[in-house]
Length: 472
Image 1 (cartoon, one colour):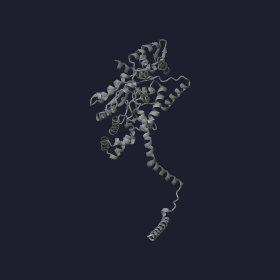
Image 2 (cartoon, rainbow, N blue to C red):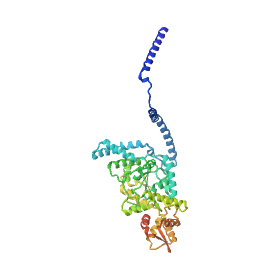
Image 3 (cartoon, rainbow, N blue to C red):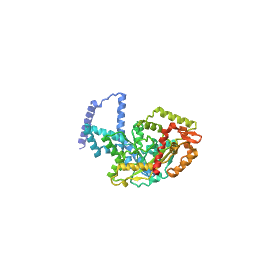
Image 4 (cartoon, one colour):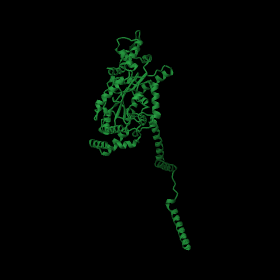
């Protein structure tokens, strides 16, 4: 038995040597020479493949777990917690929109009407979805965005808030979708409301085409904002946008929208547009989740874009002619005033949160037009009276000059009639601010409106009509 085993082992050894010799003579075992750059490229591709298949998933899982724990701690101090929908992966949300039955039907309809293949229409819908859906980052919003908003707002303005701002948000029942509805006076509106609502929740803004410029677009998307093509009338685009707003509303995402659809050119509240509000109403009818609309009234002693807006209103169009040279000159002048110690902040900025309006109070089938009119009326009712607004209205209506003491007394009486702000405006600072801008001129009897600035004074005076109408 042992001899057979020895013989078998010897036969195996011989065969192994023959196989090794044959493999050594095979071309596969011969040395191959490669250029160094090609070798480096192969190693690089191998490293990327290894990282994408083995390393990156583990790293993503690690940071995802840390993010979830951080958001859980953050939700403990927010009045309106961040919903899981807002933290979903952007790719997953895009896929969810594209394969929704209503969007699929819109894609087929678009292909039939435009005489294109369905895969072409599908890719168009994908581009729309990628353009609209944000990529929210809690770190970018609370670690960077809130701090920048707070610094910028307090550097430029004396921020004044409503008496019950936070209490009104805290009164909203848990489980309701919160939507801030505000008038649009300046691009600073985004900054102010983001700063003041930081203790409530992370806001998802609807922003226009101006924010689609790279790299600003990446930053804005990371802050949770979603883009809207204001002038798009395509049925496919509207369906994709409607589906995103619908899913966000059903998912409880805290949103912020401007019903006017653009900046006010004359200082008055504009007629509301129904697009986004109609999408919210559709979502409510499908899921039954109540929506709490928080009216937000915003007013300024100085709107940064005031002369640009007045010029567009005078021209009768919405073409804003703000050249970079003008913007740069404005910034340099303000830096020089700060260096010489003569810089004045742009006066006050008042932000008042009104009591919530619940969509369920409009019945099972709310009328979007009725809802929009109601919300704009609520914004008008909460509009704070600013010092520049009062002075502009008073001097334009006066037949002659008015003393500074007379302006102070009149402002105090107006504020007492509608106490919407915690901090009252300082009339001495208001007069100094308006004199520096050349809006008013000094006379023996007091102060009078500068006739050369009537259009700009009227722009600010128009905001007083909101307070007057609300009082009546």
